[in-house]
Length: 528
Ligand code: FAD
Ligand code: SIN
Image 1 (spheres, rainbow, N blue to C red):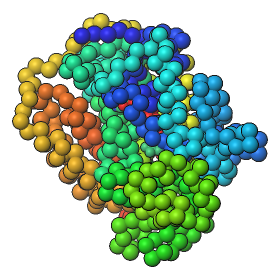
Image 2: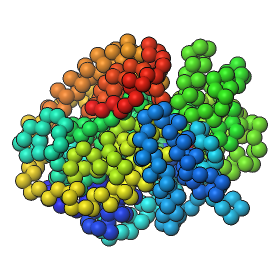
Image 3: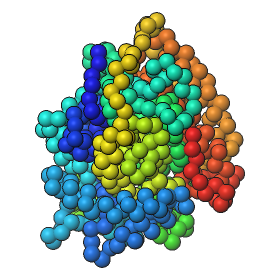
Image 4: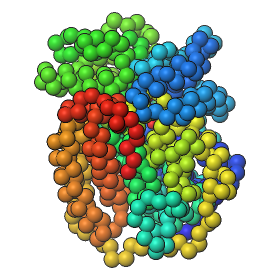
C-alpha cells in the first residue's frame, strides 16, 4: 500500500504536533505515531517550559544559564535564537487554548536547578499533559491533518532503497518518506513525501531505570543513523536526580520544581548532603545533583536517598504538586510530611540527529525537531525545562524551512514497496524480551552516571553479542514493533558507547573516572 503526502511527520509529542499545525497551512500532512497519539514524553512533562516572561528577567540571563549548564558545547547563536523566541511560543500555546498556572493575575513562574531566576511557565505539575492535550485537540480538528496512530515508522527511504548503495554520510543523500508498519492491519505502508520530519523523541528506555514511557526507544535517531544522517553528542545522557524509588512506581518523576520550591535531599542517616557538593545545594544543575546522589549511594551502600518537603507549607505543596501528591499517595506516602524515597533515572537525550536551528539535517528533505534532534542548544548538559522550549521553537522554524521547495524532494514514485520475502514467525520470541532486559542492564551498569574506559569496553563487547543475535533474528523473522524497537535500542546503545569512548575527558553529563577533568582538545561535538 502507498500514501502520498506533502509533509510526513513521525511522532505526536510537542514537536510533531506543533510542526503539524504550522505545515497544515501549507499542504497536506500525515502524522504517523506508534501508540495512541497522546503517548509521548511530552505527556509526562511536569516542571514546565523555560521562558523569559517577567520584566525583571532577561534573555541574557536565560542565555547565560543555558551556556553555563552546557559546559562549553552549546552553540551560542542557537541558544540566543531559541531563548529569544520562547515568549512567543508561550503566547502561541495560550492562544491555542493551553492554560498555565497563574497567581495574582499573572503567570506563576516556577524555579528549577541552574536557573538564576524563576522562569518556568507551568500548569501545576502536569505541564506536558496541558501542552499535549491542547495541541492534539487542534490537530484532530484540522481538516488537512491525518493522524495514523498505532503506526510504527520502520525505516527512512533514501537512494539506498532505489538500489544505490549508501554506505556512509555524504552530501547528496535525499529522504523520500518512510516505510511504516500498520500494526492493526499487519501491513507495511510506503509513505512518500516532499519533506519528512522526525519528531520521535528520546531514548530513555535504553536504560534499566528511566523516567521515560515505553515509547522512548530512540527509533528516530536509529533510523537516521541507518540512513547515514549525521548524529551528534550521544554521550550526553541526562539522568534526573529524583525518580520515585518504589518497586511498583516505574520510576515516576518527582519534578525538579519540588526542589525549586525548597525541598531538601537527605541521606538515610538524615544528613542534608547537597551543600557538601555544591554551594547551590539542591538547586545545582541536575548532573551535579545526580552525581552527588550516586556518590552517596555508593559510599554508604544505600539503595536510595530521601526528598523532604516536611518544612514547607503543606497547603502550598498540595496546590503546586497535585499529580505528584496523588501518585505518592497511591504508594502510601504523604508528600507534604513523609520523606520521599528517590533515585536518579535516565531522563533526557541531549544528543541526537544533528540539525541547525531550523531543524535541517544532513539529508535533503529530512528535518528533525524535539528530543530526537541535536541543535546545539543543550551542549553537554540540558538546563531544566529547556527541552519543551526547544521543541516548540524549532518546530515552528522547521516548518518554515520544510515548506521551501529547495529544501524538499520530488515525490519519488520509483520507490519500491517493503520487501518481507523469506521471513516467518520463528518460535524464539523470548530472545526479544531477554535481549531488551540485558541491554538495559548493561547500559545502566556500565554506561550510566559515572563511566570509565574499562566499563565502556565491557559494554561494547556485551552489546556486540546482542547486536549479532538480534540482526540474525531480524533477517529471518516477521516484523513486529518489539523486534524493531530492540534493534533500534541496540543502535542507540552503540552510538552512546562509541561517542562516550571517543570523549576521553569529563564534561557536563559525561563523567569518566579515568579522565576526571575537561580538556580544551575536546571542545567540539562528537559526530558519528
Ligand atoms: P515526545 O513527546 O517523546 O514524542 C515522540 C513521539 O514519537 C511519540 O508520539 C512517540 O509515540 C512517537 N514515536 C517514537 N518512535 C516512533 C516510531 N518509530 N514510529 C512512529 N512514532 C514514533 N522537558 C521540559 O522542558 N520540561 C519539563 O518539565 C519536562 N519534564 C519531563 C518529565 C518527564 C517524566 C519526562 C520523561 C520528560 C520531561 N521533559 C521535560 C522532557 C520533555 O518532555 C521531552 O524532551 C519533550 O516532551 C520531547 O518532545 P518530542 O515531541 O520531541 O518527543
Ligand atoms: C522536572 O519537572 O523536573 C523535569 C524538568 C525537565 O526535565 O526539564
